[in-house]
Image 1 (cartoon, each protein chain N blue to C red):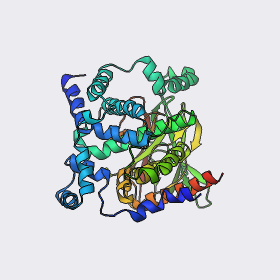
Image 2 (image 1 turned 90 degrees about the vertical axis):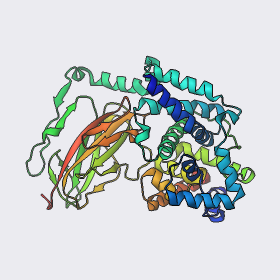
Image 3 (image 1 turned 135 degrees about the vertical axis):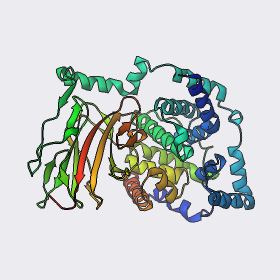
Image 4 (image 1 turned 180 degrees about the vertical axis):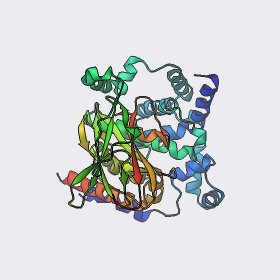
Length: 267
Length: 162
């Protein structure tokens, strides 16, 4: 019991708060820090032989690490990079799960693009033009928490209001690392799931699997787009670059798009 | 893959390969695992077709990718009972004697910890980053990092007691 407590608290207590972290030293070494931050750390290095030694250690060439041959390592990387992923590599990378899921989807895969069934909202509005999705691909569904605390389905494109609390469910045909990125009207992006950032949770395949947490919409009005990113379990969806026009993701990732029309008053 | 792309890989590796290897070794605790993971991280970077030069901080970007990749390895191998012997030589603060047991314990806890909490624990407890630095890397607030660490510690205490 004491051990657990010890590995957290004392480190923060007895360390010099001015001591630069390895990350800060790595960024200084890579010339990534702004002038003020760089000057502060360089002053610290000039005054602290220990920290100076740490920084100089970063300058050691890869060759100085006995157990690693950097030329062999780089050659391996380049060799791998030059070759398309083999079938075995794809299977290792989680394609087996995806292929299995697609087989389950079966005949529906033949019909490539289908219209997702309309899910009319409380005001009777039908879904917008953004509901065309790849059959078998991930599907994001959104519910708005009503006054009675129960979830009401929201259709893509349907008006929502600042202060609305939204919860999400996903339909997945394969075990996936899942993330939802929101892109606001001004292009700002945020994590809608997981709310706290960090690694994307692995979600097992299923219909309308509820995701934890809820998003409360802020005051900014305009069209906001949610992108559900579903990648093979070994691939991190956070590596996708998401813009207003859609995500650019590593191989194997798929996505669904959901539009929120944020208006000034509740519908 | 073009000659230019291959050259870019070489440049990125020469500039940051050692840092990625060092991070992998710290998280995985084993040189052969770290070397393999370093290769996988760079392959992943290449296949993502991401232009690293467009990043504000390549170091932070690689820290994140490496941490996520190595954490996945730890968790997958841990679940399969394949964690290898931990190496104590890569402690961040040169306090191997006092920290080795804590490091060993932390790595074992990472196997089953909540992924977000595990990531925060790696940055703060393993890397020795400040909560502000960890928050910046994770794209969350400092308060969130504090909450994640509190929950991680509470969970770890229960885990050890059990």
